[in-house]
Length: 113
Image (cartoon, rainbow, N blue to C red; front, side, top):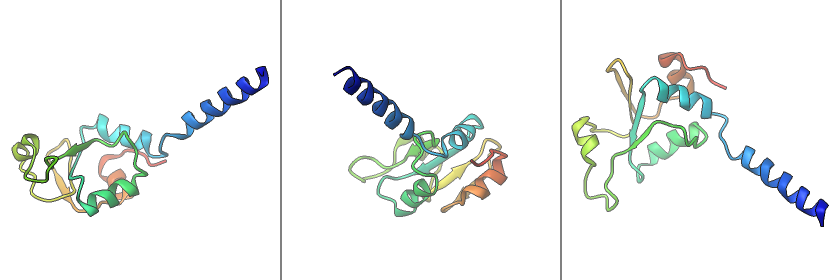
């Protein structure tokens, strides 16, 4: 019984460690540099962008769509977001469309894994 509990505990710890993305540190660097990724849950290009970043939960993502898809959130209206995905950088520059991780790295000096 004791070995079973130890085995299950070790397995749970291993699974918890595996839940992160290899891009978590990169995404945290983007967040630290006030980079924002604006998108919508229904946007296939936004889903592809998230896929390229291994669905890291650390991505500095801002959801722009209202739950019923009837319009934009106030934060995205105020930010004048007209295309998805839109990346906004701390120095005011923007890029729209799916951006390769290497290009984001070059733009921000955030190192890739």
